[in-house]
Length: 231
Length: 409
Image (tube, each protein chain N blue to C red):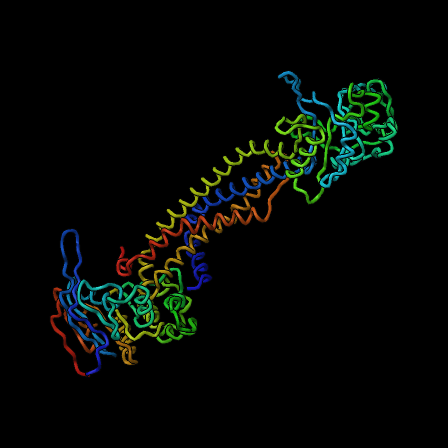
């Protein structure tokens, strides 16, 4: 794999101030992720993996160093441009699904399209297409409470797909699901990766991480190991 | 995000917390209802004052001889040389004079059969009725020829019919005014109480010449006198300007030297009533202040509940930001909620305002006066309150840091 780096981290550090104590979540990370990679980030809690995800997701800024996505340095972008980048290029999948409880599946999937600027998308058609893709074509008018955990996570994945992103960031996507459902979700992410979407996954379950071709282990804010397994 | 979408989702969000939304709206409802009632009352009172002014002649100037001084001692109002019919005639030729009428007034006792009644007598000419916009409901008015000839005719107000004729038809009846017999030829339409509390229908009006020659008597030194002249200003002339011009004209006519005081007075009745109304409007100002306070308190309630809503939905805000919402999108969403809250409260408040204005009109005994402007202003006030008090919570939501909002517990 010698594609040009798609996501670049250069000497990225993140320090939180907790009371009178400094917490070093990331200590000078250098990392390249190529387009189309399926990467799992692993490590114990507090090792900095979620912090890195938030930085890649343009939700947070590093204390020092540079984070680049498609060659754009996130630290030089304005909040509105970061919002547009999240809308256009990134899709998020969360551990707790984060669906709007009062909206049905279709409305939830349409939500990011509501914020799509300078793009003319038929939101309704696109949302239906994404729900079909995750296998929920029959449950579009169900509210989150009427769906199982696995189904809710599928809705969330459909929502992440709606904006046609190039990167999907999944933070513990199977953390709230049983083993069988977890496998279904990982199969789905694997298929999305096969269609060309770069996937970055945070997990501490080795079985889940095994779906990824590249595994990066974090410890104390540093990369401990970075291994790729052959195709 | 389109505004229509924002408003639709705002309505949805407010329905999800129906009781809370309603309680929040209550403040706005009360505020808007009081603003509306207050304005309707103000307008009703104004309409009543306008009616009073037009009853007295909206564009009428009244002129009376003033005080005269002799050796430093004031001889009191009316002591100066009276006006005459010649003055009336000259004034009729002034360009700004539409109608001019001279009058003599006196208190008299009128007798019909066994009944007698103390009332006021006005001797005047045919212009009097036109100036006062006073029409007969029965019979007719006297004309210029009858004024010239000094005919023994009388036109009476409604109160005379009631008190002297016990409500019976008085046309053709003979009454004696200070023992002078006159025939009633007309009854005037009812005018009710004046703004000064006197009964404007308790009056007998007879030709000026008849009054002077047979009942009141002429001035000892000035025959053909009149005690008061009323001048209706022609359309297109400014009342104030006419008032000045009339004063100047009379100074010259009465040979008053420059720098000397006038020996007559020119009034503008409308000014009197407006000045009196101004003192009454202190009450209106107080009401307006209370309505504004009610609306303000309602607005603070909206702001309070919007801040709670922003805090409660911090994670939702974080999620929306992660999905690509800009700060402005979040701002619009929460402003739309504040607007829908206040707009709905405003509409309900308008309904209560209608009711309030109706009750006020009933108890205050004037016509219900709610114009579209009042309704629009009330709704506008509600929307303005929504924008003003919704702005701070909405901006607070918009300025949240995406990751902090998403992680908020």
